[in-house]
Figure 1 (tube, rainbow, N blue to C red):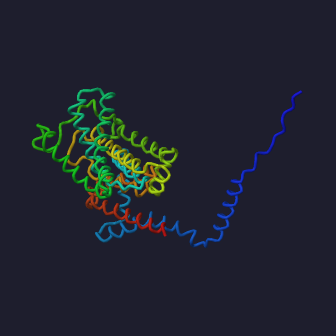
Figure 2: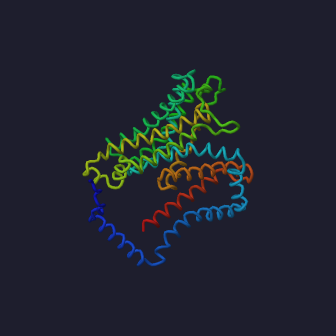
Figure 3: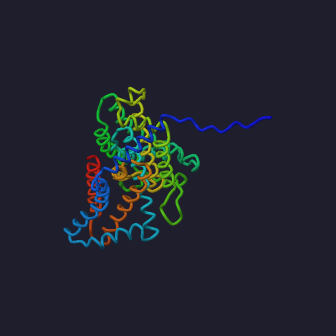
Amino acid sequence: MNHAAPMSEPPHEPVDDIRQGAAAAALEASSNVPFWRKTLPNVHIGLAIVGPFILFALFLLLVGANPLEIYITMIRSSFGDSYGFGEVVVKTTPILLTALATALPARAGLVNVGGEGQLAIGALTTTFAALYAVSGWPAYAGLPMLAIAGAAGGALWAGVAAGLRHYGRMNETITTLLLNYIAFYTVGYFVHGILKDPASFNWPFSPQIDDSLRLPVVTGTRIHLGVVIALALAVFIWWLLTRTRFGYRLKTVGGNSVAARLAGIPAERMQVLVLLAAGALAGLAGMIEITGIEGRLRPSTGVNYGYLGFLAAWMAWNQPLWIIGTALIIGATSVAGNALEMTSGLPSSAMHIFMAIILISILAFGRGRAK
């Protein structure tokens, strides 16, 4: 007759003692921390959130505007009706993608300021492909090809900075920033040249792309399929960075590239790879601007979205899911800027001052946290 074996207690692991000891030490250390030191980080967070609104209110008072009325106008114009909310979503999409193009290299210790130029070149290659390669194609075949063309254009532009860093030992912060200006004039060169629409009455823009190559939109709004693509990519990058071995290795590279090399991680190869991927994200934003909004290439296509994305990434401390929220805030601020110009007489550039105040507050908050 078989008898069930008695249940035995799991073996006691030494690591359990270590964890319990560490937890007890942490609890004891926490109890010895003065109250003012515990609350200081919360004060920093509060100042970082409220401070920009107070400073911008002072600026509005200086120029003779009523801050309360301005803030109410900003909220109503952005979220007061379906049209305003739709415009916020439309503006948020490229900002979200270029912010991800900043956040991904940041995990590897790189500063990519080149989302602006990578978006522009992505829009340029998308337009070339739409007019000369896939013109007349159905949407199910043409749109994926345009997405590849846009991403490839952005990756190619980022590859210039990656090559200069890898072979020339040049700082990617400087090179990506300078390449933005070259990209802007490159787009201008083509829309004044071989891409110029013959029927444009000398205006610098390309011919319209086929309707079959436009992204589907929600009826009655300008909200397009690119919104879903951007949100999906934000979730994917969050998963990639936080739930995979690749993300852990990338964090190691960003924390200490020398230690990563000693641990056998190909640090430089990974940095080049994420810079190319970042360029592809920004290039995809250019494709979405062409196929979802503009329908043709102009010198002003996507202008400033790269810099706004950089700001959104910094506001979220390069956390992909937080970036969704910060990109939405900046998108709403951009829409509010246009409304302010029409209703209160303030120039829309006043919103740029507001955004600059936010960025300075974040930088100051970061220094406070570091101390």
